[in-house]
Image 1 (cartoon, rainbow, N blue to C red):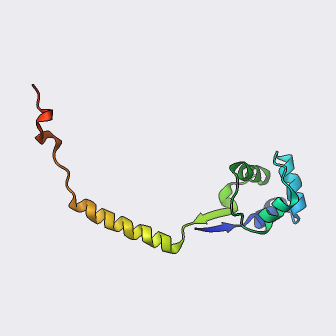
Image 2: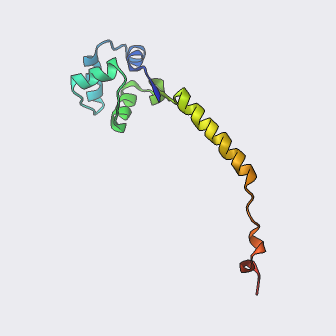
Length: 110
């Protein structure tokens, strides 16, 4: 899975923030006190894991949506494997015919 993380660009475009310490203060104002190393890692690179509350605080502080600075796309190989699996499943579905439920005696009225 590929993740495109553009938080630094959004900081510059939306709030004209150039330093992580300024972003730290902005996050603290919006209820998320983070240590400076944590803020630096958010600004300088793609995080491996991120809490929902952190994502919400970033969105609130920048007045934006998550999709403005983070895009998650499937890997090309994984996407091809899933699509070929779906094609095989649809071909098998065409071959399977379900029996008519009214052919059984359980549905006869007494």
